[in-house]
Amino acid sequence: MKKRIISLLLSVSMLMASLSACAPASSPEEKAPASEDADNSQTAANEDAPAENTSDVSAEEDAAASEMDTSPITISVLNRVNAEIVFDDNPMLKAVEEKTGVTLEIEAPPISNYTDRLQLTMASGELPDLIYTWDFDQKYEKWANDGLILPLDEYIGNYPNLMANLNESQFNMARVGGSDGQLYAIPRAHTEATWGVIANQEWLDKLGVSMPTTQEEIYEYAKLVKTKDPDGNGKDDTFLFSPTGLWTDCWLVFSFLPFSLQHAAPYLPDRDGEYKIKEKMDGYMPYLTFMRQLYEEGLMDPEWFTNKYYDDRTKFKQNRVALLHGGATTITEFAVQDVPNATEIYKFYPAIKGDNDAKPRNEAAASTWGGWMISADVDEAKLTRILSFLDWANGEEGFVTIAAGVEGIDYDSYDLEKRELIVTEEQQVNRTAHVSGYMNFANTYQGQPLSLANTPELNEYCLNAITDYKAAVDWIDIPAVKCPEIDNWASENPDIATQKEQMEVSYVVGETSKEDFEAFLNDIYFPSVADAEQAYIEIMNNYK
Image (cartoon, rainbow, N blue to C red):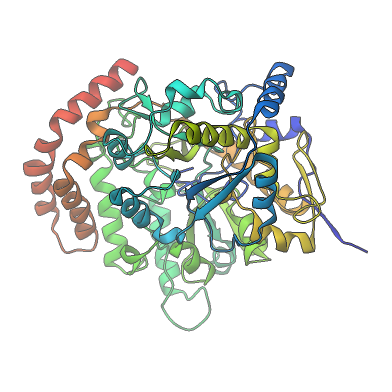
């Protein structure tokens, strides 16, 4: 008899209650894909959330579907897709073609190399029709200003699913030149971030300590991990963590800085209430000095600065490090992917607290995980088909088809109202090859993901983790505000921006003294960024 695995046994009211405060990035989780970036983790149901699917919206969707051109057409796509996906004879892609007439011709470089491939593709001028960008950064704005991608404002009002499934804040994330600027990408609707830290709970228990909650406790725990052999191999070869960059591990950064996941201007005031660029915030040098101390004493992975995307996860699962940056669904993803007992050996915790914080912090920007740019070379007819496809993908049929796959092959049944996915063990194997959050053109529909986890047990675990997290953190919404001067400063001053990043790393690894680093900031960096800084502060004070 066929064994069943029930994915989500929740009513809509329970799901909405559990996700009322949280939903890219950068995040970087499959039911929302891992944070980038994306990780990015659970669904926000806030005042900016898309409207419920009223009868009017349903009628619009039905009308749009009945009028949609389904004649055969090929749309070329550059996308950032996990390696497990198989494109040849993929039944989900065939279902997309049958329902829309669209054959998706997907180029998918490895996730770890996607940024490099994207930049090379954009520089070549030979662009596919549809291009995924996982960040609306200076490069994105440059591509728009260089005329490589199309402005879309004049078109999107004609596509009801896009207008219903994306809110104003999400669209504003993709605007160039500020929230009043032009839209150059269709955002990928996503769940808000629940950023925290995944701990190897077995190590905590073995070392006889609770999860650290402050900077001082983290330092003491790092020394235990380094010297007390938590993996039991008789060697001092374990470390506190192995970040993929200086500013990626928000669980540690948040205790020093009110710092957003965009890693540009924080769009949040410093802890004294004043708006400042990151490098002038009170916690900037203390954070880098703390990282320097961890590195000097051999408490963090000495190879951290050569890490590529997801190397931190690999080392964590190999029992080489104690802590991992992640979201509320990361552990359940591990359980499905390659660590079946992940819920028994790992635990999700909020960020550590700053000196004067009553609670750990969590920052959440508008819930997007990058977006879809359209090549400026497409003609009007093809543009209409591309936008119609994206509109379909943001509607009920498209969302379920792409995220769930094909009924009978990838799942037994799906109840959208309950977000209940029923999958057999055999079908779960198929799902790994056919669908993933990376393949979705929208990661949420009406503000909710397809499901939370793949079994009732994992779902309960994930739901409890989210509930505990919400109660523990100080939730901070990052406004969808932009300052072109500060956002574009790095792309307009690449030499100084790169030198500053290199100086940060050089200081942390002990190759540059504090005096030399501060001299660089005072003599070179601050004068160069002064005009952009002033514009940023004026914009934020006006917003405030």
